[in-house]
Length: 218
Image: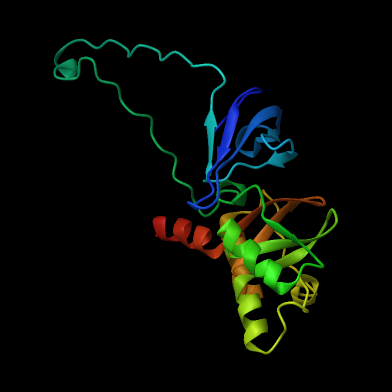
């Protein structure tokens, strides 16, 4: 997926109760497989987007299709007027994790209650949220964390998200391979890993995303 300045980007929400997020590409960052974008969203906010599988680009201008190359002889028989669809590049375990991560990232504040966290998880239709202390990412809190806390007797209106963030959070870089991130999940026994560049969280990868790639390449 490639975009130029002025193109529109749509990030599918995956939920009928939550609208897609739409914005305009303001700047193209990186190059090649590491290309990402600075996007001005329709709600007025601006962020850096590493496109995941839920993102789609709408060109600012309609690009004209090139006419198919002419063919002659018996090899062309029965193919006149047809075009060959472009080959789809399969995502492989050694590809960078930025190819499958979800972005933009759903977040909660460190002082939000577990009840607020539960509502945010449902609204965003995700299994985990990044916990923020103002602009600083602290770690992740998952729906499993919330369920275990409440089942253990925690008051959802008194316990804060900060209380459930582990002391050591496993972070990935956009260039880490999908295979390496799978190993991180196994070793840390987690199902979601946030992806960051310096102090900015640019995406989240789930165990479902990773397993899908591994299964497709068995």
